Image (cartoon, rainbow, N blue to C red):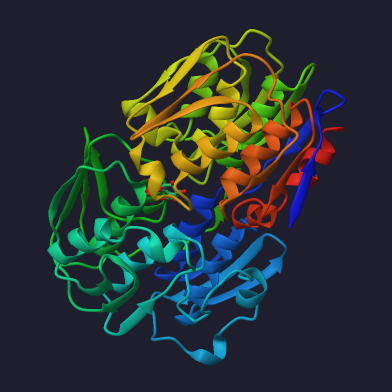
Length: 444
Ligand code: S3P
């Protein structure tokens, strides 16, 4: 699908409610499936990635019902069963139009589904084969296979890539220090540790998002955090109702639009403000952007609040590196658009893992923003942007089958001199099907 985006003619004003956090939605379904009891999950994400998780766990026998568009009722005895083909949901076909080989254990485009589910499945009593679409089949899985083998798992891959053949068996705890700041790897090992013999301890170079640790605590697991170390004793999770916060990674597109579309002033309500995710807010403050947090509160163990954002004329450039990176990894494509409006050079370093996302986000971002007329250069582990002036536009761009790239290009289109066309815009459905409709609410 081609999307034509024209320069915004009016400021963005009003109020929106940002839809559910993708990371928490995945975890809510997975953890409730391995917990005993009934629960309600409110504000579940409608993105195709989270539907992949929902269908996967239905295929293991968990009873999951929609009671309205974003509310799920889940009932489980905490035991997963080998796939039952008759429970294979038709929604899988509807949402994965891009899939290469649908299968009951098909994880679609979703790295979180595959990597977290692998941690759960490694300790079961049966074999599972996890598959993914073309993009997911190219993404690195050694990062979970290696530590899973250390806990005793039996996994066969194709040279470190999906399909993953997981032969479930009894696992044991480990003491693991990861040289990656990856919440997917961390969560995979912690999920394996729930059902392993002995204690699992885990540390990582920089803190990655901690929704797994928060939900484990909320659902009664024996987990402690001591300085940088997570200590987990084998535990059974207890089913508990979960209210999911809005996704700050989705809010990032609106935050950027608010800062760069002249005259804008609006409020983004119910946004997750977990400190391991708020790197974008810190960067906006560092750049001198007009952003304010209001009405902070706690929702099912997670901090949330409302964000007021206003157009800011003189944004400053900045350096984004080290510990900043895991706190805004998914926001870097739209931060590049923001940086194009700052007065000077913004540098992003230590972000090499961007090359392992839904696309090679360094290469693809640089190629598409350059077409627009933005001055951006590729580095091995990041990029530099020379800000100043509006992008020329007047060109056709590619989403590279990457939802976050498609939405970042849309934001760039709102300030480009000439209209732009984005090919493959339908990929936004992966995390944020409501994206365009919400822009409509801001009187565009
Ligand atoms: C996620 C972790 C991050 C992030 C992804 C979601 C999660 O990936 O990029 O969109 O929910 O755990 P990594 O763990 O690979 O950094």
